[in-house]
Length: 115
Image (cartoon, rainbow, N blue to C red):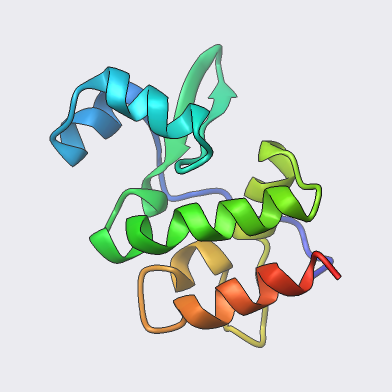
């Protein structure tokens, strides 16, 4: 995957993520600190891509993928780039594949990065 990463459809500030997930914003911040949710600073505000909180399936698989990427030495910015870089063999980007039946393949690819 050597292409330029795609931009997410939308960036959500953590209070918006909290509202979408129906939980306190402090809990969302805790998820970010624990590496269970990816958030990056955009315009001075921590934000997360909408695709990463768009479905319960994505939320189910995201923590495991983030752990695999961090274990492979990726920081949050690099993990974001990996999740949003198009991969013709998926097809699409890994972040979108987490929301459907391709999550196992995304996890397999993330795991392979550690070797």
